[in-house]
Amino acid sequence: MLDHARNQLLTQVGPGTPMGGLLRRYWMPIAAVSEFEKTNVKPVRLLGEDLTLYRDLSGTFGLVGRLCPHRRADLSYGFVEAHGLRCNYHGWLFEETGRCTAQPYEDAAAPEACFRDKIRIQAYPAATLAGLVWAYLGPQPAPLVPNWEPFCWKNGFVQIVFADVPCNWFQCQENSIDPVHFEWMHANWSMRLRDQTGPYAPRHLKLEFDEFDYGFQYRRIREGMNESDPMWTVGRVCLWPNALFTGDHFEWRVPVDDENTLSVTWAFSRVPKESEPYVQERIPAWHGPVKDPATGRWISSHIMNQDFVAWVGQGTIADRSQEHLATSDRGILLLRKRLLSELDALARGEDPKGTIRDAAINQCVPLPVAERKLLIEGLPLEELARHPVLGRQLLDGYPFQAGQPAEVRAAYEAAMGIGHTANA
Ligand code: FES
Ligand SMILES: [Fe+2]
Image (cartoon, rainbow, N blue to C red; front, side):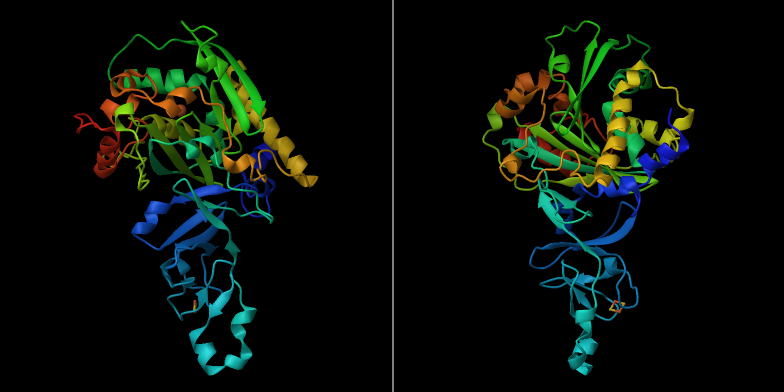
């Protein structure tokens, strides 16, 4: 259990808070590039700040404050120009550095005053990588946007999936280092939701957690497994500071504010050998619902929706003074301890854990990947369909989140070289 003060320390993310300061040292995925095919401007809220993300007519992304410095109009209703974002109220124009580059009336009536030179809007760096738009809200110099190993893999179909989860980011991230929940929340609960009563999935018998530069590996032995199994030799990754990495997908828990989290999944599906070479022209993105409108209850049919049920169920901000941690929660303790010690390191002026500043390392940053060989080299379609992890969405549809649009399924099937499937 955690006292109230330390619970606040871990969960508050707004400007001026210690954890908000730590999280601001990392690039956060906040949108997908393909979202900007339909719109140029999008309101975003990140780490308790209301912002406006835009792509101007030259293709440059900018991330600026939500309100215009003139008379506070909402810039997410602004429109883009060749260079920058223009407020729809009186036409002031801002560029991605925060400079005001035009004030149409002042420029005509009082050009000698150069009032626009005295005006700036809050602006943060935005970058694109792997089909995602990333934001950095910390001090300069910014670290590099991590070029994780799967972003460099070839012959993959990638999709980006969002969900708005109405609870604090940290209880979502604690789930990234909680192996036993797979057995109960996903395997066994799913089986019971299908109205079956057994048999239950093999039990977890042994867990290990190892820290490395970019997070923690968690490893497991379940009934019937031996110690040569990749789930014991490699395991999965709780990626620092706010993601889960399972080899073929990332799940970021992006703090919107103290009470809301944007779930961002980047999922890589290796195409079968028969479909090589495959080059993806466009990475689709979609936004899945979290509640069933018919019942008002949380959706529980898909893996991440089940996780969302756990996260929001813990309360908007979980009260960790009331919990009873057991030996299964060793990873959670390690995660909390490391976050708290990183707050101290940051206060001492040190560069926080896992920030990458070396371009040579960032060519392609390796991570522990249990199925690396298969993900890189691929499998024939028939074998892929039988693979318990990598073949999951081939026949039965996307298993991770409810609401995949038909056009994304169609693009996936075209990439995989399969016809339309019955139970998508
Ligand atoms: S309020 Fe934005 S230009 Fe006037
Ligand atoms: Fe889960």
